Image (cartoon, rainbow, N blue to C red):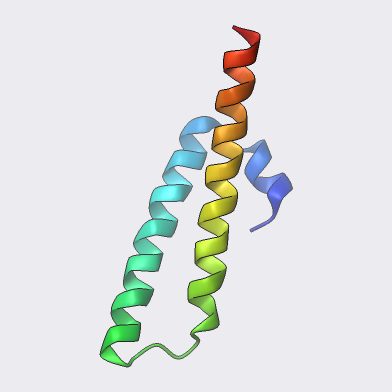
Length: 68
């Protein structure tokens, strides 16, 4: 996922996207355990996307604290 796209999202959209990604990672892990996962690199991509979203959420929290 593109960083600029994530930054343009609202807080609620980011939270929803984070929940969707976590669900996707759960499904990928389940597929991996059952031997049905065709592209194992997808797990890494989703984990990194989750980290990106969490980082931007935290940056915004810190900016709000600084301005308050």
